[in-house]
Image (cartoon, rainbow, N blue to C red):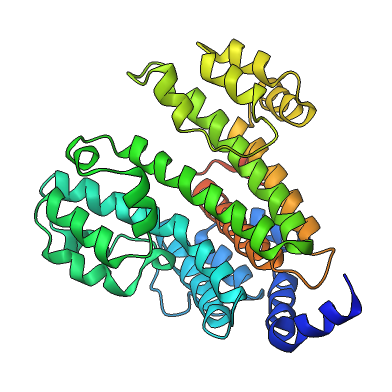
Length: 351
């Protein structure tokens, strides 16, 4: 990066980059995980977490402590940190961080749509939404009582309106096919975010985020393929859900779209060293799923993002690393509460 670009980056974004790097230094270390895995009860876990950056986030919770409570308060802490960055961001970092919230909005919207189709009270469902996916106009959606009314509210007054308008019709909402709608929205979102990072932003941000988003697109395509087996989803319908970005485009995506079973998926990935390695790692290890292998590679990509300076990818990387940390804590807590200490070390290490 040119010296002038570095100076201009620091004018608007240098402070927030420093804050994120400070947050990154508080991510649990291998020593912290050793201490957590030696806990005998969730109260021991609470005590050990209080000695980390999590501090006293559970101090007001009465015993016995539940795993769901740990997950809830750890997520609240992450959301608070993210929002403290988001509220101080200026363009184009503000738009970049807006994009980071869209996946949670999509999941929240699908929860509300599914609830409306099942005649459930939307006001009750909002309490179950992910806090990073909450937006100002969500409360107004409580007045919707039919899929048609909900669709109009989405199109008119939500940040996801462009994706819905281009990808989802009124008729789609009438069919209770939430996963197809979800994956269609994710495809539109990922392609839009990829365009923003590589074309609008460019530079180091475009380079790092391009690699990360291409991997995410490939992962989604592989998961969509595996999850479609045994369902009514046709091969052509499945192919329409694949993002048009990634290392698998075009040949790998075509082979996945033609796959009929797990063996054909393995054959489709054989020409791609990264995915062949991840797939074989999961196949050869009974304690590790393919999703675990994907998470491990995602962690490695996010860690590498912190090796360079003056770019926005570290905001994405920090969010993903903290989410993985929360999954690790919840896994360890579940193993402790269910007396499954044999599997307690099957978490995904970060640092």
